[in-house]
Length: 174
Image (cartoon, rainbow, N blue to C red; front, side):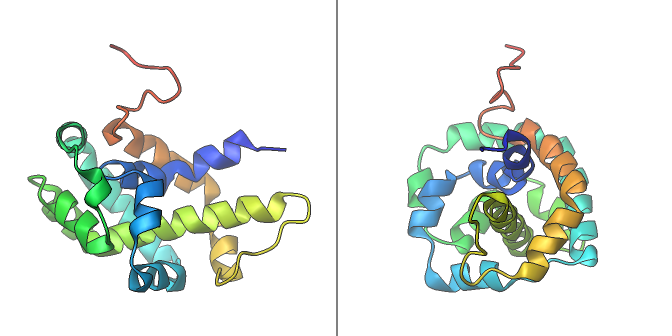
């Protein structure tokens, strides 16, 4: 059965990616080296702490990020992590907010996409006959599972800057 709660908690990275590119578009265009970097990334407590701080630092910039997303109608041209980083860093204040959490913008996206990938793997393993996707680290899946509540909370914080304005569940205030 489809577990909506689990998918909502994996929406953290999808929300971040959606700021400038749809996830299916990115997935279809990503270069192999980016895929290897994301798949090979090791999720850690230190990384989560830095990412959490970056999300907090970005909160005051949510309106700018959302506005930049709405103004960007060229998201299908995102072909790599470098493209995503360039678009994010083009928004005033974003790079400084992420860097002040001791992350680069690239690390921010790699962490986001790794969390998303491992959240989906965790979900897949819960399905009847589910198997660990090739190249996926069980240690990362276990990390995701252990931190799912915190990751979900971060996803809710990021929602305000999402391209859909955080109203994907019909709670728009417009």
